[in-house]
Amino acid sequence: MIGELIQLILVWFGIYLIVNLSLNMEFGNGGIPNFGRHFAVIIGAITLGGIVNRLLMLVFGVHGNIIDASTEVSAKANEVIAQHPIYGLGLLIFTLALAFIIGFLTGSVFILPSAKLKEDYLGVTLLAIGEVIFFVTYYTPSLIGGYYGASVPDILAFIPGEKRDLVFVVIILAIALLVYFLVERLINTPYGRLIRAMRENENVVIAFGRDIMRIRMKTVALGSGIAAMAGALYGFYSANIIGSAFTRIEWTFYPFLMILVGGKGNNRGVAFGTFAFILMKVLIETYKFQIKAFLHLPFEAVWLEYVLFGVLALMVIHHRPEGILRESSIITEPVKNLKKAKA
Image 1 (cartoon, rainbow, N blue to C red):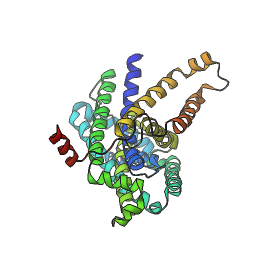
Image 2 (image 1 turned 180 degrees about the vertical axis):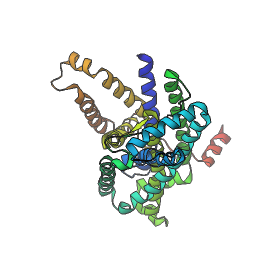
Image 3 (image 1 turned 90 degrees about the horizontal axis):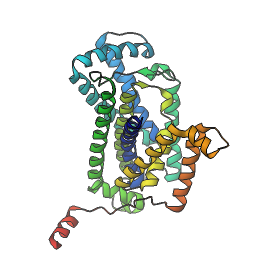
Image 4 (image 1 turned 120 degrees about the vertical axis):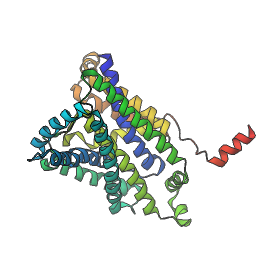
């Protein structure tokens, strides 16, 4: 039981860390309130469940609707992967690369209708666009199965039993760690300083001849590409994609709360906030009925998670708006060299 809980915590930590790093780059560093983060995660799911599944249908000569055909395709793909593990690794890399590319392209289009809006209107508009995509995905079974869902291949079909989950944990954490270092490196470049300047004062950036709309497009496109990879990873882990899994609460509001708890603009704070939040979330979901009985709560246990996290959000915003770990200064190469010279 303890081992399963730890694995579950680490899996969700890895997936959400990727999403939160992408959102922190947009919101924490760039000042773009992207309340449509679930849009990019859905794009990753569509890439796996809708595009990759259909490509595999062509490869294996399977016909029919995506709901029924995906089950047959997954079974055939699993047989091949079980005999040739390299195909599982190749499928993972191909899907993640495709998810990033499609997420990047759709993200740049996603921001276009609202790129010139101010923060409040921008956030609401992005949320509305994200919700439209969610409902289209949910109520269109021909896309990725809608509310019925679609099966996806098991990229670790060659690994039996409990070892499969353990290896998946390692893969997700490795990808999350790689994304962390890449985003951290990116933020410490001139581009990172540019988006921070945009967050602080757009007029100053414009005065220096920079195009705010173009900067926003690049930032949201890059963040969407990263978040789309998380959506594809989630699909691989669950081995099934269903439209109802990609709600604004799970993939937009919770990521915002994790960032606010840890500290926006600080990737280390984001990692801390993500782990602390996921730890609480998994424990609450696992022991919610015991907690309800112990505290004699006057409402059903299924609402406990939302109540506690709502209270947490209010407490953080009121008492610690900068988060647990405050944003640190960007240390450029000249500053590093100067410190080394003084040392």
